[in-house]
Image 1 (cartoon, rainbow, N blue to C red):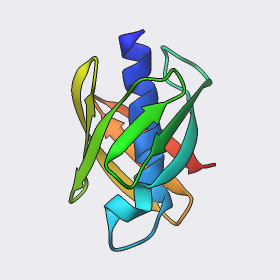
Image 2: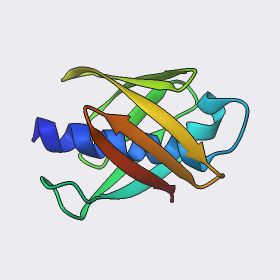
Image 3: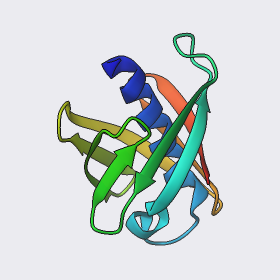
Length: 110
């Protein structure tokens, strides 16, 4: 469950960052995102993430925590699971690519 959650979050965060073409990545990530994870582990697993302007996030399973962006690095600090750090890349206003531990995921704005 933790591995699936991690992959889903990475996917969504990546899509968020790539999807919002703006000088301020933190502003660009605010909102709801979804993805399909085509990895060998969770083929077509639909994930959902919502990033709030107060620095909090939540996923479709109700897990939540704090998020922050420094340059092209996104860090998620889960209330229950610890921290995750990943690379992010914006692709226009509606797509973000997230890469972490060799997994790459595309997020799309909802």
